[in-house]
Length: 220
Image 1 (cartoon, one colour):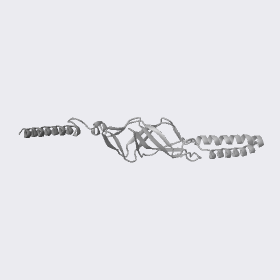
Image 2 (cartoon, helix red, strand yellow):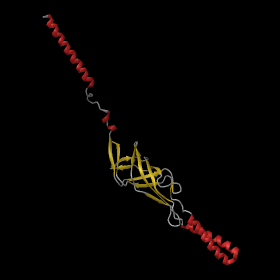
Image 3 (cartoon, one colour):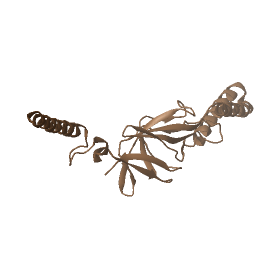
Image 4 (cartoon, one colour):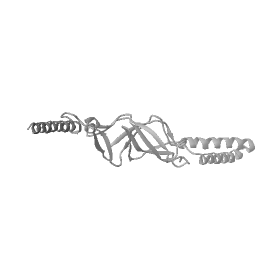
């Protein structure tokens, strides 16, 4: 009888010990306690996707001067946003964000007809560690007309020719010299380019997106 009692007591103690062990394991490996928050769902780490539509304005300030004398088509340049980019009243890109652009065309022009021109566009926006590729309209800057300067060059050539002709052969020589000198002056104009097209450093340029672009921003 004593043996049976001892056996039953042993079974009861074993069962209690097993239950205690199982409860401890459940506590160690189960779900987090109520109120705990997983780091993957913290609001501070959440992001939103914003679509900047075609036609969104981008006003930038270029960092260094661009000129048809020193730049060629295909070369890149840098600038910064002069104004923040907004969408539905929300700031998507802050003032000062880095912008990248390229020279689409650098026409030295200026050979009597036409003037030099420089055409640029934007192709990337850096914000929050992201490099966002964009497409914009192009902006063209032309050099000032040089016709007055060309006229002066031709006039100087004619005057020098007339002086030389007068010394050589009087009035008839002066007429011949004026013609020759004028022709020489015209030759100089034909052989040289006009003023370069220049976009000075710190210039403000206005562009618009030519295609919508998707941007990831932090949630509000």
